Image (cartoon, rainbow, N blue to C red):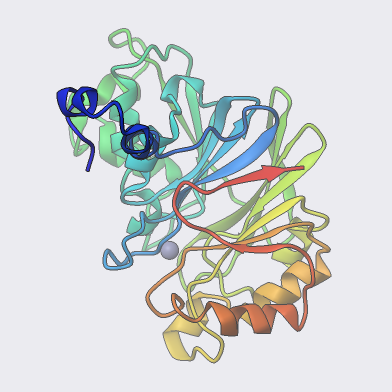
Length: 312
Ligand SMILES: [Zn+2]
């Protein structure tokens, strides 16, 4: 709770109260003001009871919010809390289109309506199949006239209409070996297809200023592609969605800590961040850390919403 201004004035004598209030108002610390950093917009999975936003990340570069990776529920609120503006964002990446990675996309886009964005926004993500839309379909299913859910914003996808900026969706048909997908100014984007059940999914590597930032997305970790993508990463964000010993569909969709640790070790990553924390992994951090430490000895952190990880 914050005290009303008049109450604070009356209690100015108690400077500690004032500082508590300010601390609550300024929840997010500035991230990436002087270099590169990844801010966690959502450290949870699909469950709401974990009291975390679902998956989302933001790459900061000297005070500019440049790349968004995924947009699960609640991540748009965290984006606002981070102090970022949609007008700053150069690229939007999707790992896949499960709800916990994509449902806040229209919220972020609509928020930009009230900003001053003019330039197009490239959106890159996986192709589709019978279970999932492609990235192009996802964007058009939301915004295109006459069938899009939010077709009142169709000028975002129909050139020549209105005065808004354009969304530019791209389907990235990545293979099992990491490949250069595109460049945008001083940023280079690599992707590899990863296995996440039957759902088309990508892991991403973003290179800026000689630094490598890698996002596993959701994957069971099978194959060598993720390790190759993460090779010598300065920061590797991996998803801690299942505990060690997970079986059945959980294991077919997600990688346990031992696989995360092995991938981080084989790829010689310089910093490992565990995110996409779920009720089945929350509270098991000690066990998770033990499994990872058997294989990987570098810096390791468990992500919370709005955490800021400098990339040095
Ligand atoms: Zn997920």
